[in-house]
Amino acid sequence: MVKRTPPLKNIQRTFWKLLFVGLWAVPSASGAKHDAVPDWVRSAANQSLPSYSSEANAVVLMEEINYSVAPSGQAVERVRRVVKILRSAGRDEGIVTVPFDKDTTLVSLHVWSIGPDGHEFAVKDDEIVEVGYPGQGNLYEDYKFKSVKAPGRDPGGIVAFEYEQQQRPYLNEKTWFFQENIPLRSASFTLELPAGYTYGAVWAHHDAAKAVDLEKQRWKWELKDISGIDLDHVLISIMY
Image (cartoon, rainbow, N blue to C red; front, side):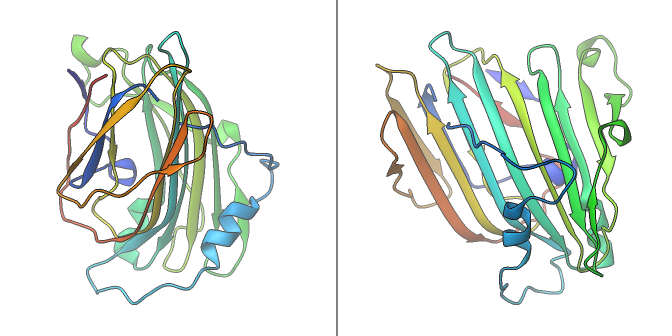
């Protein structure tokens, strides 16, 4: 069993989950210039939202996870995420932080934001800092983060990012955590397996959702309007 150290708040996953036993997610080509806010960010930002309680400080407008496994067993994870800040207490949700180590190489990270006044920002690569795990000793000496405080992260502001990360899983298992501390409007997980592989799916604390067969060893799960829960730290265990 591989145990991932609890991520920081803006990328933490919590309670409801889908567990895949097998090998896997389809890469989502960006195609967008990184000096401008991509269309997929604007599309998420312009959607109509339901009313949220006063306890909801931010909402995830969309999150797409694409997980692809090669015949060698090495995987590539691609993530897109868009968050809207609802209240001042939600400004921390605009801090983008992605962990990595020698076995989970971070290939790319791009961050954009839209201020409450509509002004658009594209974070430059040299504005993203690399830091070590706080108080790290021998156990976490190779564990690091790429992090940036996105501009315009005030009530009404939008923060978005996408990254690509190589994975070298020790076990044939991947867990999708689709609930966290803030509400989530739309979440999807796309899985791609090498030829000759199959998967098994186990759901926890949620009714099983049927996968859409995208053909050519690709499957997609989608969920809508997931409520948030108040858990500050979660351990994510992954096996396959």
